[in-house]
Image (cartoon, rainbow, N blue to C red; front, side):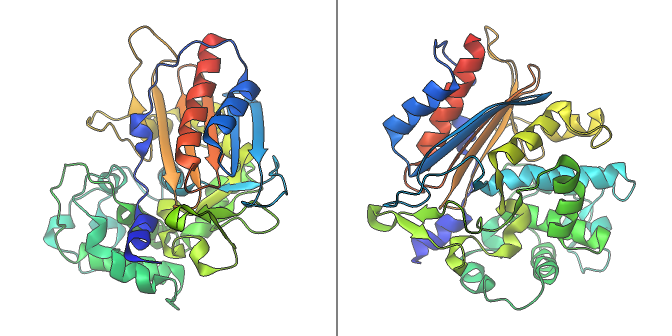
Length: 372
């Protein structure tokens, strides 16, 4: 990997900021929308789903598991969702709050009492990290030098994340607190806080607090294992299937809380359904869901793992929440309209064409819903 690709592997900025929420009226259904987007963008594979607050609505897939191959992708395949994992990390923290093991005002110092923390951070709440408004920049702690050695780090994942937290919090951030700066490192630190609170790896806590209660039986971490679609890089414009057994098939595992989850379309649908308030009784209360998905901050309006938009003039689907994720080999976009109880998901295993395909598919599915 050259320096450009090393940098790209850490960039998962949510381009869903650019997704319009006003969808044009159409006379077609979701399958037609999927067919049209797949034909016009031609990714290796593309999957989509629609979900309601009460359950699944529609799902479909097109394409093949590997570029140049003939094995079709299936509804049972798993898709890497990149930075859409951030909202899951925030939801796991919310579960700990509801269990009385954390609180929404918990500061960095309160989460890491054993660390030597710079005075700047002592009163900074963990939620500032989740909103990307703490002043922390990825280059401060997980830049090119870190990425070059992180996959070979022999320490446990909690030890690696604790070391990242110690390095970041032992000095003031390079950015201005209160200003928005998208930061994967911030969510790694939140993951480290979850580990410090529970004494368990973030992966284990996420399985127990999110995957298991929501029934996400196909969810996991890292590149989806065989048999499954493979992610694709595009060096020099040539698609390169990435064997999931090789280290380069995903970002370093320590990045987990910021973006290494994978799951089936059905799993993703159940997750979005839960965020619409349709999860199992007692999984998350209304106050937690509101805190996770709303914010008074603007430019951008980023809540806790979700980008928020007000209802457009003229109605449409009402206010929306969404996010976009990529490890530069996969791409995923999710949008939801909480007031209508509707969610829209698109995933691709194509680095070159997946972003446009996913954005257009979500827009198309929203248009279908608006016209219904």
